[in-house]
Length: 114
Image (spheres, one colour):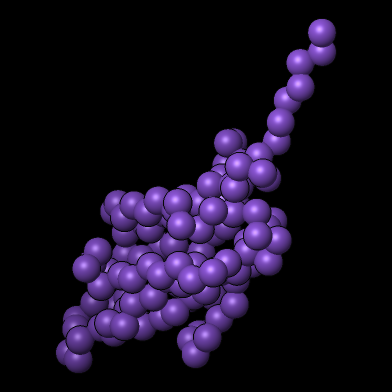
């Protein structure tokens, strides 16, 4: 898998994240973020990395049993085969999905035999 992640200053494994390659060779990041609002989330691309973060913790006295914690997760494309600047993100029903396409040079090429 070309994309790798590293944690910085947060509980390991939070938020629950899935990395996979879809049927069109795009790299997909999915994060379970129930209880978060779209306005609280930030996605930043720099060089060959993408960072997803949220600075908002659960407010004091929040009666919900599921705690929201601030987090920062960075994903690095060490092979530089992904076009980070063309990433597309959506947030639906508490699921953040970021789709990152491969760079043109990294796309598989099919050659027809004559």
